Length: 123
Image 1 (spheres, rainbow, N blue to C red):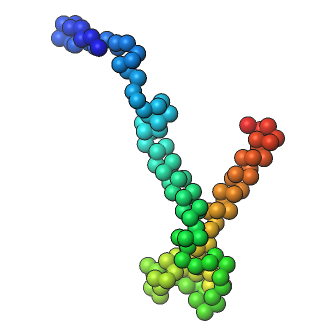
Image 2: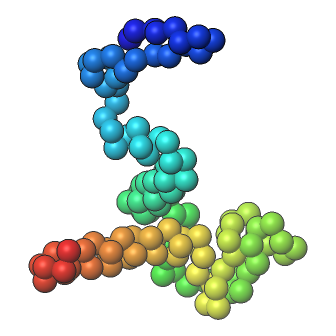
Image 3: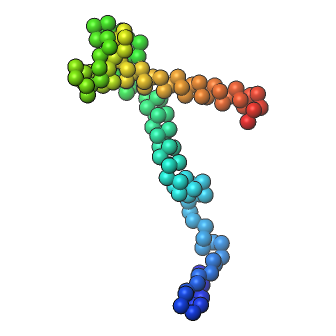
């Protein structure tokens, strides 16, 4: 890089291309520059990882019925229990477990839709 004095202002010339090309690929630099894109990518990655690890992360089976604990409030509300962080539904199923397993269904539908569009030539 060459510094050229121009009165009170110092100008820098671009130099050759080897000085400017960083070691990080262009898409990753662009993603880093767009912070909201990076945050969205991390959230999507978290959803995918939690969904794939659902059998190990979910505290209960998503279809297990416990009629004695139906319509239980979330843990942070009055009457809520630490056993069911997000509460229970009308027939006593744990909502956190259903939410975690529901991510798997959403990813499966998205994958099927992608494959169908690819097969039909819509992309």
